[in-house]
Length: 260
Image 1 (cartoon, helix red, strand yellow):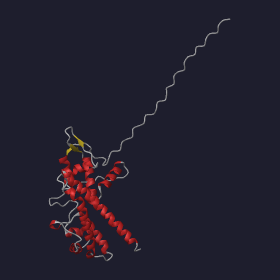
Image 2 (cartoon, helix red, strand yellow; image 1 turned 90 degrees about the vertical axis):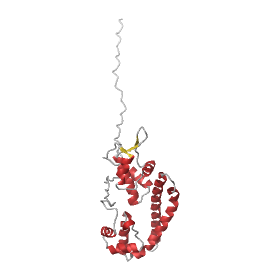
Image 3 (cartoon, rainbow, N blue to C red; image 1 turned 135 degrees about the horizontal axis):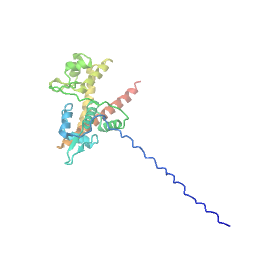
Image 4 (tube, rainbow, N blue to C red; image 1 turned 180 degrees about the vertical axis):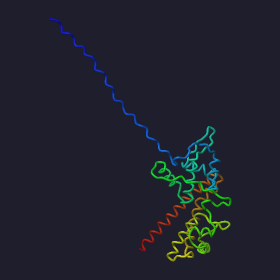
């Protein structure tokens, strides 16, 4: 018998093994403010000059303090010098406005910036407020009795009555600040219920006592000779002021609730 020819078994063509899908990198969200140059070409003196248009008392120590709090991250040159970008300046401007206009503590401002960076909230990039020669901002930040009354929609006499009652305290040359406009607006609403400026003396007295308490707490920091201590004192004073206001509001709401 003849041997059967052996069947040659050819190896099957190797199938290409499935390659794991490469995860597509997510597009990283640009930190707030978006659309502003992040090229760090500004020295600390340049950043201060840009901010002092609106915040004349801004100092290098305060700028460094805000950096220490993680609110801005300037780059460092090989020699160790800080350099800021236009985006850094706008971020600092936001922090300073929140402190000045809303009396927010840095902790809350940091949370707001984190939400802006994550795209969870939006905030238009504000324009700098240019100051005129007499120190009055182009979008007014200082008032006389007449301009304060005009912007609040009241008579000069009403503002004068608040001054006479000690509720408003003008600064040098009879100039009022931004917070005074809010005081007038609130006084107007109270007057609609028969609460006149003379009745508001107790509010001023209570505020003065709270300010004295805050001054006691921040006094050790203000006495430090280094600039960082002064900057930290300002930030602490703003935070304590906000907490005092919250405590006053909570106590008042609790007491008024029993009148219902």
